[in-house]
Image (cartoon, rainbow, N blue to C red; front, side):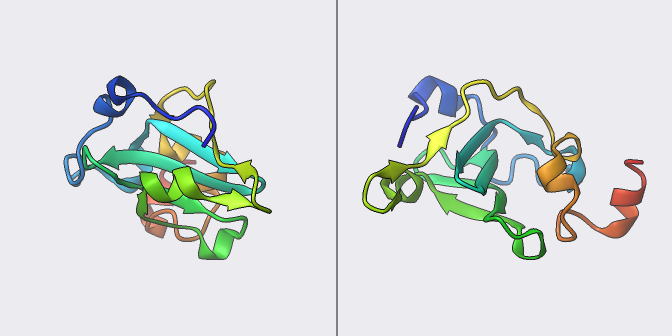
Length: 117
C-alpha cells in the first residue's frame, strides 16, 4: 500500500458503531483509498484492522456500505505490483458531498437522498 495511514491518523477515525445513529448521508468520511476505478471511503475503524465505510468497485449498482480489512487493502496488488493508495489530499466531509457515493442507488434510503437536493 502506498501512503499507509499512521497509528495517529487511524486514531482520529470514530470506532465501529460509534456513529451508528447518524444518517448515512451525514457520515463523515475520514479517509479515501483507491486503485484504478475502485474506491474505499472510510467512516469508522475498530482500532485494529477493520474499517467500515463505502466501497465502490467501479460499478454504481453494486457499490455499498460495509466492512473492509486494512490488511486486505495493504496486501492487494494488481498484476503483482500496482498497490492501493491513500489519498493524501483527502479532506474529511459528509458522504453526501462525495459524488461517487451520492450518485449510487445503494448510498442511503431514497427519502434521505431527496433531502440533499
